[in-house]
Image 1: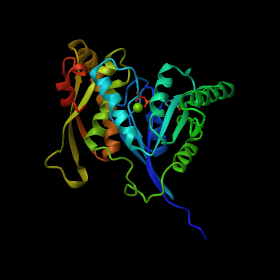
Image 2 (image 1 turned 135 degrees about the vertical axis):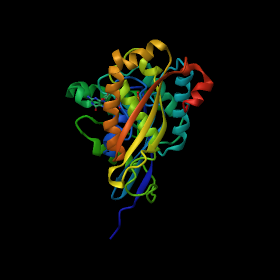
Image 3 (image 1 turned 30 degrees about the vertical axis):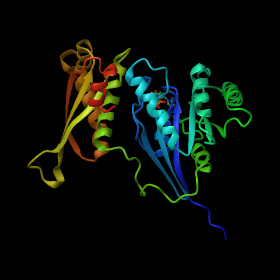
Image 4 (image 1 turned 180 degrees about the vertical axis):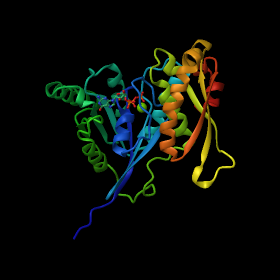
Length: 309
Ligand SMILES: Nc1nc2c(ncn2[C@@H]2O[C@H](COP(=O)(O)OP(=O)(O)OP(=O)(O)O)[C@@H](O)[C@H]2O)c(=O)[nH]1
Ligand SMILES: [Mg+2]
């Protein structure tokens, strides 16, 4: 009787902004570990999501979308992805099914081709948004892209997936596992991410604040947790955490937008964020949001450091 070998390793998900990397990460993990939004460059740091299976463990490393940087922040995000790629066992390049393959995808593919002998898996995301014929055409275009840029061997695999309706999510996991080295589990059973709690809390606030804002605002917004402290004088079965969070924007006009008329918008953000933070922490919280101005922080090295970049 031959026992199946246990495999474990790291897979980085890369691609243009908005390609569906974080949504796929969450679908594979089975729980939200990364925030998502329709705004490009939602993800700003690498996030590890862990997928436990009987004979394998996948550590997904979700990354910020690769793009032509216009600010120092943008440059830092691209550098971060490059550093991450050097350390993983395989790479899942996410390409949306509903968007033509562009110069950005070609550029990313050529960057990936420099990573010698790492399995490169093309993941065609958001298949629910196109019909069969369009999906077939996109798959063929992706295969052609691989042959053109990577040479004869092309992609190690090409897999279509929809994180929205669950189509092939399991299969993407199987494909990733097949490229992992034999190894015992690398993370303890049950751990779904190694994100610090304070970072998750800040991200959930940013996700709520991204809802409904436009133009430059998503880029200008940064969120930092100031403190999380238990409210004093509460019994063990009636705990309350005081969560104080600072939202930074770049200009006073943006501050006014975030706060809204009579504070209405900020209250709404607070209500939405509180619900997801309470679900995460498993306890009731009092959420205290403060909006501050950090002038042009995306371009200022000192402020970037202060905001955690
Ligand atoms: N219909 C559909 N929408 C999807 C799917 N996956 C992601 N989306 C949507 O696409 C948008 C971007 O998703 P994200 O997962 O945040 O994309 P991302 O690649 O992580 O983006 P960045 O972090 O900005 O690089 C969101 O509005 C998602 O709801 C999918 O399978 N189907
Ligand atoms: Mg993301």
